[in-house]
Image 1 (spheres, rainbow, N blue to C red):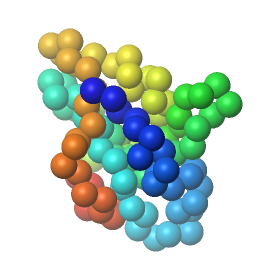
Image 2 (tube, one colour):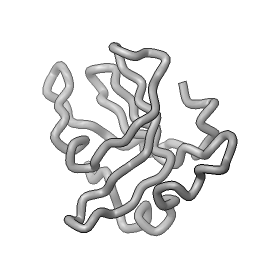
Image 3 (cartoon, rainbow, N blue to C red):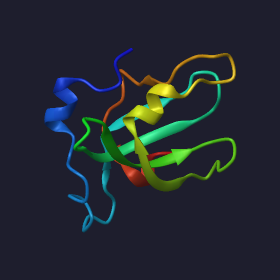
Length: 102
């Protein structure tokens, strides 16, 4: 599955564009179908090397309440879950406020 598409590139807010927003919108959801990790992507920008840097909320078995941070698309593309499954993009995800991403 392609995690990043041209359509997403055109619509994803750039990094730091929602800094002043009290409850920013999560625009994408990536997850491991077999390991309990979820990345709610708030915004992202293409880097000089062609990779994408995302600001997101990460929920995992280690930090189930979630934490904010940054992740590279290249890192997500290398992740394999417990059964060896790759990270997927939630195709039915509807953008929602960060406070609703749990």
